Image (cartoon, rainbow, N blue to C red):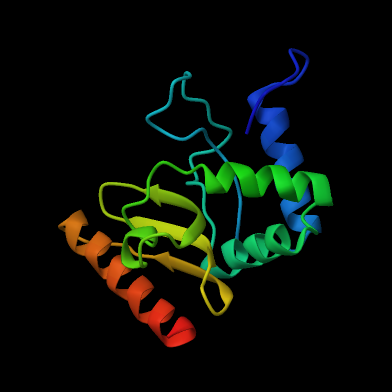
Length: 157
């Protein structure tokens, strides 16, 4: 979330986003605090963790892919941001070289997540993988890579 108005607080932004998420049907996703670590000071409106689901992530990626997330222009901007993702060690790492991927990762000490639009050779598709309670994060990352490879091969080979 980018704060572009000195007149609005982080709390205001959370309420605006959460209202949008509810109205748009993303019922499993809520924002309560900034991500950490962050380049900015941590802020929170609740002790509750931010949360989402593979269903909500998949639904928003589908709208971005179709150009219907808020508007065509907004969808294109979001897609460009996702195409510029620098963390490509999860879903993208399980794909053949040269396959275009627009993804967003997330992780904590015990979890690894990735949600992606994959522009496959035969078909485009959306893949969202969320994991939790891994004692060794590299095992979770390797599992996401394996899932990614298997899905790509099934749909595109």
